[in-house]
Image: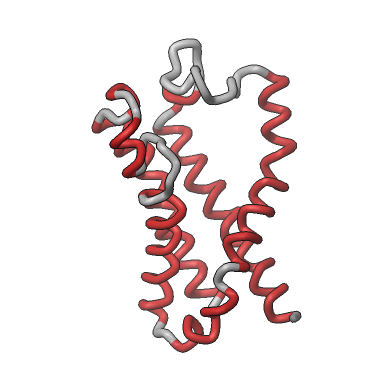
Length: 154
């Protein structure tokens, strides 16, 4: 039991760190998509320039990512013995690939960097520049998560 608790806590710490790093990089590169009166996502994203909305998001950031990472870690419990037997490179590739494929690119959420988004979203949301700017966040997160997981989690 203690092993699983430690695994989930470490998973959360790695996830939260990677989430913040990748998000900060992406926000700088894609600021016009997320903020300002002409922002691309103004019809469905909360306005980060509104102090009340920004404070609400700040209050929910930690608990929402804690719940998210706990759910993500628990589904790995049955395969942990097999993952521990893999080489460092295979652990890295598995964890990076898992979060990239399942949590981002192949998720059922129609967004600017997912297969579902490419199918269902209007053209302005999936232009090459928009797609690759948003995809960069997923790639940074996945590679960093895979590396830190192979180093500290498994």
